[in-house]
Amino acid sequence: MELPRKYRVTIHLHYYEDLSVSEIAGILHTTEGTVKSQLSRGRKLLKTKLMEAWDDDE
Image (cartoon, rainbow, N blue to C red; front, side):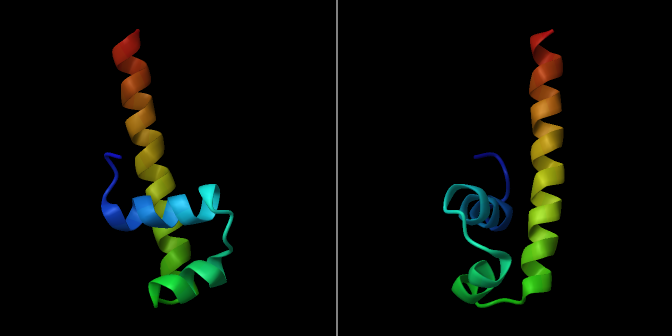
């Protein structure tokens, strides 16, 4: 929930709703390239957030 909305929505649609990149692009009225970029950037941000949380627990 801490990710910016555009990344959070794209990741949710892809991983939880099991939609393809082209389906997401249609829903969000954007290009497939934009969806791919948002997925990549969202994954990177999510990894960073998870690593920070992991480090805080140690």
